[in-house]
Length: 154
Ligand SMILES: [Zn+2]
Image 1: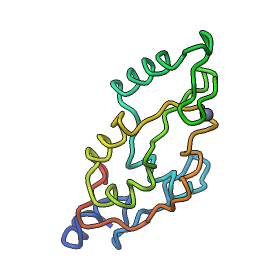
Image 2: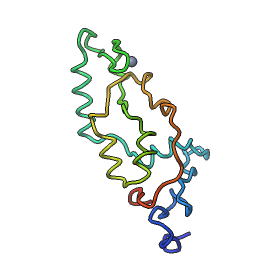
Image 3: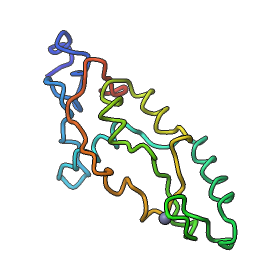
């Protein structure tokens, strides 16, 4: 289906990541031929990661949290224990799934990207303590609204 055929259907049905019924397709595969879980698909397509500013902020924050943990450690902001810097990850306090369901499925890629990189909503935690290992018990909605857009190819 070309975008012209569906152009007067909805702004959300623009390409191969949203179907004509305004639902996120789950055909975005890992390269193994197997579809990813919906949450992984949504994160990969619509929350495109941390920018250089956020990454630099994280490095400074890890060092600021070193305290008495030694040169290779810092205090995890989730459990307050000394953990290895080499296992550090950034965790969203308000989970991505919550943002998607309330705002992300109703807005554009840049708005999601700005939210994803808002350091007021980020904590440095051990990789194994990161709530994004799951989705915080929140299920991702598949449907998007008329206000949704998903970047240059969507
Ligand atoms: Zn922890």
